[in-house]
Image (cartoon, rainbow, N blue to C red; front, side, top):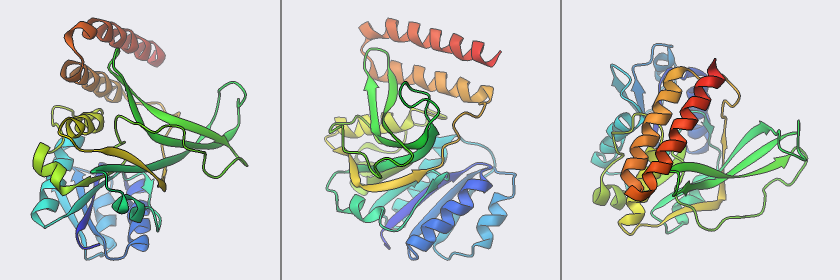
Length: 276
């Protein structure tokens, strides 16, 4: 594990990042970890320091630089220290022994595991049932410029892992993304125009355009402790819409953009009305 570097971004996320780090270190005691902190003030840095893990290095930013710019600092440091592979990992994931080996064995250049999280479903036939949602990667609506995840809901007491339903995906979630060194050396780092959101599909599309393969490794499963249902602050919606606009202008042909702009405008109105 000496040539693998795990990069985790932290921003006032003490409640998640400490369990994440403890679980990761327990599963892989010799793994290299870089935590990039975006000016946290919640005491998480002190808790990270208290772990006293020798293979963990913290990059301390004085302010919130956003996801892409902060993660790029970690990527550059990892490459400088000789990383062969880098793993982007969200602080609200819970790594366990065995998730990493299938990713490393897969020949694709960008990889992700199945992400698994809890949800109380409201869909017809499952209303009110709590269960697991399995995330099989992302697809893009090329008419609207919207990204969505391929999800499979299994109610409590159902199958432990659902059967594979999708063979082709457009992108891997940045919540857990393994990137080979040669990808970064050829296409560069995350696009820093994105402060938050859409940097992962943008990166995967650039990689595919350069001839690299993006794939989901279904033998690897990662628990993702999503905070669904909580009321989001306004800056969340601002960056979601702003980044979506950047994505549309970057990847959609000009003749599809008017429809995408209209949809984005209506989506913004819907988000505003839901907040009132």
